[in-house]
Image 1 (cartoon, helix red, strand yellow):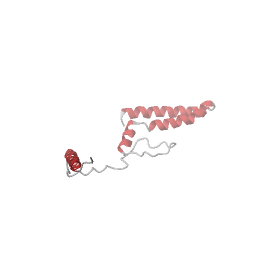
Image 2 (image 1 turned 60 degrees about the horizontal axis):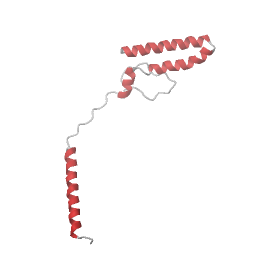
Image 3 (image 1 turned 90 degrees about the vertical axis):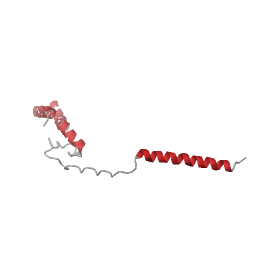
Length: 121
């Protein structure tokens, strides 16, 4: 666990403790305890290592809003991704564009040349 993960985890723990104390006191503070507990759970999801794992596709992304979720992934959930197969060549894209351009120019010249053979005057 990185230092940034530890800082966020400690902040979430403090927020959770504050929410627990507020719930125990009662009154207006008890009404704020539930949203604070939800904020603590959300804060745990903002760990840089979890965000990076979600970007790589190694952590679950579709969790219900109220569930606290795992505090840290214990192992990769999906395993390693297969490496994409290397393409075995094919024509150079610049060559394809060049041939298409040349064919278009030749076609335009042929159409223009045939237009002079039968004038509309």
